Every structure is written in C-alpha cells, then in structure tokens.
Image 1 (tube, rainbow, N blue to C red):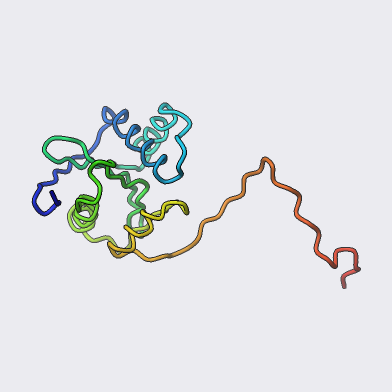
Image 2: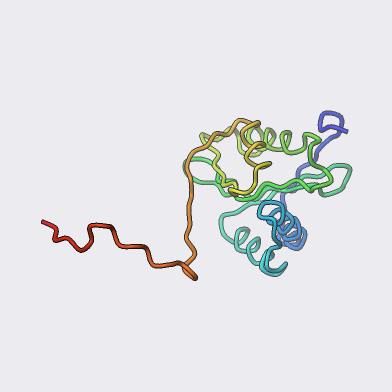
Amino acid sequence: MSAKTMEIQYRCATVSDVPLLARMHRQSVEDECGKPYPSLSECEAEIERCLGGKGEAILFQVGGADVGYTLFQREPEGIFLRHFFVCREHRRQGIGRTAIQWLITEAWQRPARVRLVVHVKNAAGHTFWRVVGFSDWLIDMKMESKGVAQAPAPADADKPHG
C-alpha cells in the first residue's frame, strides 16, 4: 500500500506522547548509527528537553496507528528539523515523502529554509533527503576528547619564526 492509497493523519504531540516519541527516537538512532541508544530514559530526557524548549512534535498516523513523527524548531530563518522518523515496517510506502510535503506546505506554510542534520552513516537518510529536494549544505564535524592522541608538531616547529 502506498501513501497515495492510504490517508495519513497528523496530530500535534504532547508531553503524554514522550514515551512513544522516545521509543521511536531510539529506533531512529539504532538505524542511523547501527548501535542502540544508551537508554530509553535518555531518549525520553532528550525529547522532554526539546518539547520543553522551543520544540514541537507531530505524529504521523495511518489507520489510527502511529507510524512516525517529526520534532522541529521554528527559527527566524525557517525550520530546524531535529528528528524525522518513519517506523521500519512502514518505510518505502511514501509516508515520509508525503509527510515532509505536508509539513512544508501545511504545518510550516512554506518556510524560507528548512535545515536538518543527517548522520554520516545514514546512507538511506542521505538518499531520502536528496530525493525530496534537499541538498548538501555543510559538514558538521566533532572530535571526542577521550582517547585523542596529541597532534604531531608541524615539521618546522623547531625552527625560529619571524
């Protein structure tokens, strides 16, 4: 069944939806990184932080079943899409594509810009976002402090400068 033959309903999530959103978020992290999130309670805490600040969440439903969600933040220059997720068993049916189109045109009223972050290991995510019209914008890098070797000195470090 495709999204064209099924009707997707959208509803604003509330604090009572945090456990559901956390379970979906945990599955999302597992899919992106190939490893489980440290704990469901940490996922819940992240969702609560987002919703307690400027974040908003919308659940996607088909036939009364929760099939995905988005968590986003309105910014002066547009929308920052923090999370966008469709449950594994509902993927490749057009739900994600239909949901992002609805969000852009209806929920967000065609914002000037929508930005998001895709994990470097999430090849399916990269493909999806390109297919629905997004393009690469920047590369966000990080370095973990534990276990980082001291950077080698430049070859000319012992030569006087000036």
